[in-house]
Length: 303
Image (tube, rainbow, N blue to C red):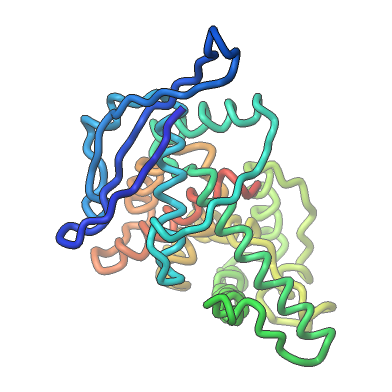
C-alpha cells in the first residue's frame, strides 16, 4: 500500500515523498506493526518522473493519481495539498480492484479515469444543484457553499450556456429541411442512421420540423437528445454537406464523439473526426478539446 507524505520547503515549496507501507504481526505481542520503504520523491510543482512510476505497483499508481487529483481539486479553494482534510470512504474490495484494472486499461487507451477526481467533481456538481433547489424552495440564498469558497451559480450558468449552444445546433435540422429532397425521404434516412447507434425510433416529418423549430414544440422546455444531432450530422454528411460549416465545430465534435467513443480510442477519434469533416487549423484545438471532454466522462456517463 502506498503512503504519500508531504514536506514543505521555503525555497522549493511542497515535496512529495512516496513510501510503501508493509503490515506485520509482532510475534511476541501479536499486535499489528507497520514498516515503510521510501520509493522516491518529487516536487509537487514539477510532477513525478517516469522512473518513480516504474517502482510502483498498479494499485499504488492509482493511489498516487487519486492523491494528486485531490491536491488539484483543493487548488480551486486556495487550499494547498498539505492543508487538505482527510476523509475516507468504504467500498467493496472487488469493486476497488476493478477500478485499478479499469484505470490501467483506460490509461493504455488514452482515456482519463481517476476515481477520486470523478467523485469529487460529481460531488461538487451535485452539491451545487442541491443548494439551488434548497434556496429555490426556501425563497432565499443560504450561502452554504459560498461560505466554503464555492460559486454555486456556476453550474447554472454552464447549463444555460449548454442549452443555448444546443439551441444554436438546431440549424443542423433546419439544413436537413433545406435539402432538395422530400422530407419523408430525409426522415427515413435519419431512422436508418439512428439504427447504427442502437436507436430504433420512428421519425415522422412533424418531429423533424419540431427539432428544427419549424413548428411549435409540444413541450418547449424539452431538450433534443444529443444522438438526434448525431444522426442529423450523418445525414448531412451523406448529402455532401459539412455540418461544421452550419453549427459550431466543437458542438458537432461533441455530438459525434458521444456516439463513437466505444468505437475509437481518444487519439483515433481526434484523427478520424478531423479527417472526415476537414476541420480547419483554427478550429482543431476546440474540436480536440470537445472530443477529449466527452471521453473524460466515459467512466460515469452512458451515452
